Length: 508
Ligand SMILES: C[S@@+](CC[C@H](N)C(=O)[O-])C[C@H]1O[C@@H](n2cnc3c(N)ncnc32)[C@H](O)[C@@H]1O
Image 1 (cartoon, rainbow, N blue to C red):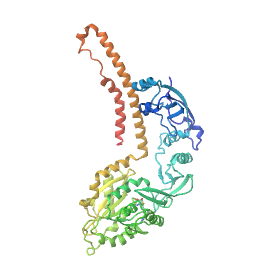
Image 2 (tube, rainbow, N blue to C red):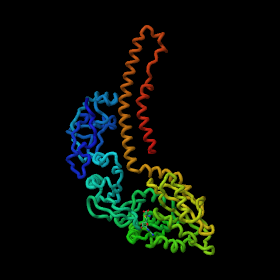
Image 3 (tube, helix red, strand yellow):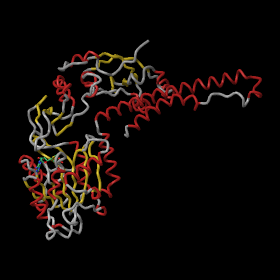
Image 4 (cartoon, rainbow, N blue to C red):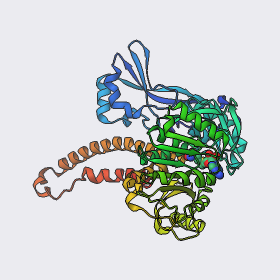
């Protein structure tokens, strides 16, 4: 019995802690169509689903003038008979042969996921994710993966496009400025980089400021939610992922960050994105001071406008809400035409994250403002989510619900769908989904061949039954029940359905 060659790296790479590319060498045999004086375009549409798609390999190539080779994925097509009959007929008519060709797979042919799956220990949480910030690839290695940091750094450095530096987070991110200690695993010790987000460029030193590329969807959501002409107080602005695009779309932005490095890059980013000076002002203060100072002073001036107060510091922002309590005395209380909207980010661990968040908010503020919370949304599945509240002209500074102005309400559909995308973004889930999808594809391809086989057998069977009934044709007519194609193929289809169900369960 011949075994189907698999496209995984050889078993000997399991447990490697430093990269030895030679150990990834693997000889396999692959079915290959030999086209002599036959145009590739006349065959390709019929075989494109079976091509050998691996990294740094061209499955279709011209070998000499008049001869081309088309390599198939051996996990899908093992022999000529695995192809659908109409394709077999076409290839026969064109005198195209299928041969088994030797092929050497190398380190370059394996994907990042493929390498990590083969090298890293099984049955423990693997290298499920890395993020790219400009030229920097950033990982957060759990303890059990630390012995593999050399090979992990090398593989990412080799295989992530445009990567010049691989860093690993060391220590936790609980410092004031939310940046983290990092060690360079591979490449240049250069952490100054630039990224593009929301049609803006952001430059910063990744080692000295906070930046999280995974918040890109959330940044975009907020930027889309706020309209040109609105007023924004960005209490924890960082290097400007909310403030810069909002000022660029002609919102009036007041951006603040306590970290002098963030403040420096924030100003730089306003500049390089050519934001008009009329549209932004920046501050390097403690958030509380900013609220008690600039926010309090300027709110009355903008009482007729849509005002948004953004507070993205999930670990602490809720504590800062107390600053709004008694912000204005009764005499000072502005007549708000439109109530300001406070967007607060926080962490909530637990199934019932909405109530956990609401409760913690009320506890911090010291009064029950639950009814005044217009929405609670999960931003990321790390149990981080954000709630949005509006505050207004009750005896202040109570936090007041203003559902009519609820931007969330308007964008609910969009926001929900954003959440789904964010959920599916987990690399682990994506990888699983990809594997299931490819399994489904393989099953479908095999099913096609099987269904055609069944069709053939059915025709034979029907023929036999007809012949054997011979003279008794009349009597047996309507009594001889021939197996229907639907019944026979149902069984084959059930496996595909199971796989489909798995995909649906992943909500992709
Ligand atoms: C989680 S980051 C968010 C940055 C940015 N808004 C974003 O979405 O990427 C929080 C920011 O708050 C700043 N920060 C921390 N404590 C602060 C405080 N007490 N006052 C003002 N800013 C503070 C940090 O320097 C950091 O840039």
